[in-house]
Image (cartoon, rainbow, N blue to C red; front, side, top):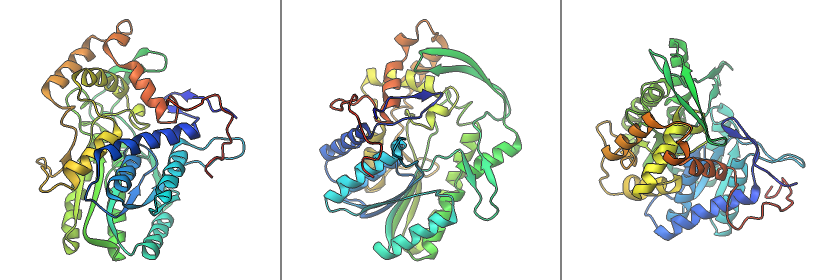
Length: 391
């Protein structure tokens, strides 16, 4: 079989095993060039198969020589069907790490479930004894309550008012008007349940109850804040309300972790092309405009660059700077006044006629496809492959 990119809406339903391996190799190479970090040695990544979670695993293992354990929820391959990209990413990375003599294991399942928490607890007890860092990088549209079985779904909506804007289809270079109505109180509450800090807190409290947190333990969860251009649909909407809940949880965890001299921080990252961001109304256009501006200024960073800098300059630096809410920030280059004013101006003048000139649509499209293993130099995309390669 020959995998081809099949894009439907904001998702790609196919993936390329060797392209995913090339993506992993590229990120490992970047971190190797930056050198080592005096960081953690036993790292649990919750949501570690793609995006910021995958990058966190790569930086931990490559820069700090950490043993890593990942929780992910991905579709495995069959004889006739491709696995999801996160499954191929994980298999490619774990082979590399294990070849270097590092511990690298994963559990494939629902991280919200009690069953997966039990399995991870048992694994840490058996293989490590304790853990130094937990990275919470879960982005899920829904969760099943372990106690009741109820499925709760999140929504991406403004609060209080309609949102009107332009939606970019980067694969067709098309702009279409869009309008999103305000969320109900129930939708706001449900989004906080799914995308807020409750599950992060549940994981850390369970690990602490089992005495699995090492002295000096750290935990981080990722967020995005943005500025005025994205606030109506993000920062001031249901997503923003859920992300504010992370700050509340982080403060509580910091108090709970004093017994192990531990720390819990929310880390603010820049806007990037990810599976999650592609689904947020108006964000694809904002990101394509942002990329155009930041690449021209020479300040653009991708996923691995952001996480590498987070580990080196913030998370494992002496006396790292915190914002007023106690967060670690690596989004400062996106939020400079000149970048934001230029993006805002472009947002107000972009049309389908000048879209390719004003926005980095090709860059957006290429980066999106690279998430699924497509578009890497040195990969033979006409090669006949077994979907179960790496299994």
